[in-house]
Image (cartoon, rainbow, N blue to C red):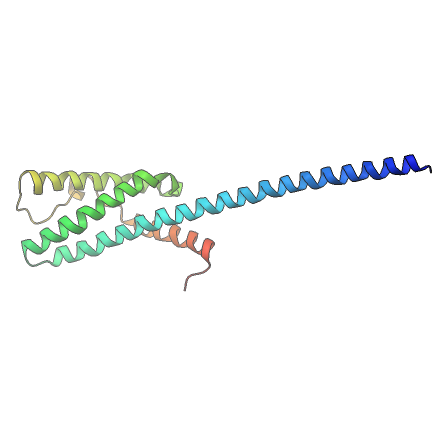
Length: 170
């Protein structure tokens, strides 16, 4: 074999090896970016669902105190400072980060939006506009029940994502 042929073979195989290395690097970068993108979505979805869930828990705990409150002043504070703000916060979180919520929760999320929108509207009518002395602001009897199963669904999805991202919780 002559030297020119040998050099040609070496250069050809070097170019082929370099091209294959380049293509493998690009494929590796693509896979890495896809994994990072999925991880980023999971982190954002976990944060959004966790925020919604914990605001709902805050509202639920406040409602228990609200029902037990002995004076109108206690009820007024809990209603105005916790329930109104928490219900509004959940609505805002859903409206701004709803695209991160698991699709299987969307039907109940719509019911929750309806419930909180109706609650805030009735609150405004009863407490701000007319200064009603009616003890509670309830919208369930008006056709806007609270979707109770959503709390557990959100908790399950939030914990599943959290465990996928950060490991099993105790």
